[in-house]
Image (cartoon, one colour):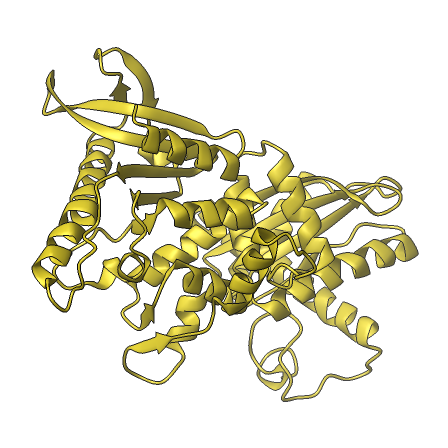
Length: 422
């Protein structure tokens, strides 16, 4: 394996501790091992799989003003070729239920079931740092890159490794970076602008979509990162690391997910990190409220959100009797039925006596989980739970009445006068 590929492999090991890194991979072209194609790296972490091609060729140093053909040739060689090789590997993994990976001696070394992975990304990683072109490679007209492809230099990957201390947050950034690559309205000068815009706007492709029409050129998002990394390089310190604002309770959850091998933990982390600032604050505040309120009433509660963000939260405390699985299941399914929801997250958080998070479980429910023979029964239960949520809302807010034009606390999304205020 080349030195450059080894460097890339080691950087991913630092970014995703405990990940599986498959190096110098071979797979058959067609049905026979007589002719094999090669892949540089495959990185597997929880429910994510990255297919990586590394290119160590030199990028032309002549000015594009005087030699545009040379620049186009370099991009096609270093990015275009790497992308086509990564896509070829991806297509092989898609071609059978169980795709076998071999070493150079054609000995089987790993099997991949692509359907087991929620997130797939292909990377073109170059030794040379041609940042202004790499950041826009996905949108250069003479390059047709795959939708899952991110083109970066090894220096960009080093920046990731020096910036991200949490695997969950790195994976969330990669998801947003993929979205940005497909968004024609986003044009950024380099990879640090992508990272800076992520820090500032989180799901930053949506930010671009909400702006005025036409392609927009974004500048200045790397300035705080430049200042931070410059202070580290010069040994000065004292410059705060630019980071997203994340409430303490949410950080607790993310830290627990990073430190434990909970299956599909990355999907939960990404779900939570996708939340807007107000939704993050609401989750954090609701956890604190439930931990206090449950002790006051002497029983466990269920807190639910509705609309675009749909989860049902349960906070377990040692002093309180656990709700039965049947009760929780019927509560969630009936809530989905009455609100005509396609999906809902069930999130269980376990706390110690001093209210520290010690464990969690979660499950995603879909409308296909709702038994058709129980629809009418669940509608009745759903209405009972809706009435209970309204009463709880009144107690929590100290209200005797709910304004007719306010949203109904039952979660329907309708105004109260058109829902339970009729």
